Length: 420
Image (cartoon, rainbow, N blue to C red):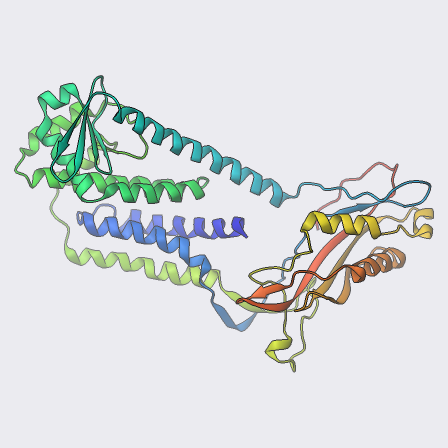
């Protein structure tokens, strides 16, 4: 499930950011720090996909996989059975996530459009190494993006050497590739402050590397620092570009003056190892003892091939999807006349096994309301067509599946159901 995956990635990013900020952010080995930041973000994206199974049983309550509740009314007196689709918390969370992602995507595309627009302004010159220099009018702060450098007319006249060395360093070190990668991370993790903070830290390291390249070209450090201060008032308009006057100027000047860190301090990065181990343990799939709402999946004397899973990589699916299953149930459930006469309502929760061939296997009542309503819910479930079977490690497997069916008499005021 995408939402669960994103939450796991977010937890990893938060943990890695704390390790970085506490142990490595003040060190001067910029290339190492750059690689470390890229690695922890990549590891965070991969960790949730690594499957670890714990051998020792852990007492846990397996979650019920609720698709949507079905609202069923009596089918007599000319009234038809209706299915009401209500938005679940998961639906709302998914919608909110995709709306946010769309907003960030629009912002990134707008930034790209601004870059292309400014490349077309002013005049262009070719520099060694396949670099294109764009000299533009106005008060545009110098920046680079892949093999393009943008500088305004005044900076080109007054301070071309320091600025060009700085921006060429960004290009030679391929910082724009990092920026594209981190932009994708923030696109999918837009809700997570740690993702944005890690990306900001990486951009800061980019500036440290470029500043170091300028100083290594025998540029006067004091004069270069004054230039940075003068340029710090410019606007940073292009989120995907490497800007000359990137924020946190105080940190950049400090980094130029402090003593080089001991190479042994790189061992601090090993603090990420226990974080990775804890994440793997937290995301592991334990063998669970049965809990209150979990029907026993299989007997101890059954072989592995007979196992009935509670959760798998690809859950079973009704042919045509959830909406098709809702239509099928709403068209086939009949409100028991005696239950309707006696004003009996409620929500029946059923668990059933979707076998490896998609057939409906054992059906159990997890939550009972009334014998007649229970029996009707079981009857309809048993008549459902074959599902698309669930799959684990690429193989079809038997899986427990849970659905709630709500019986409610039409014409009565609906009461709010309390969460269980």
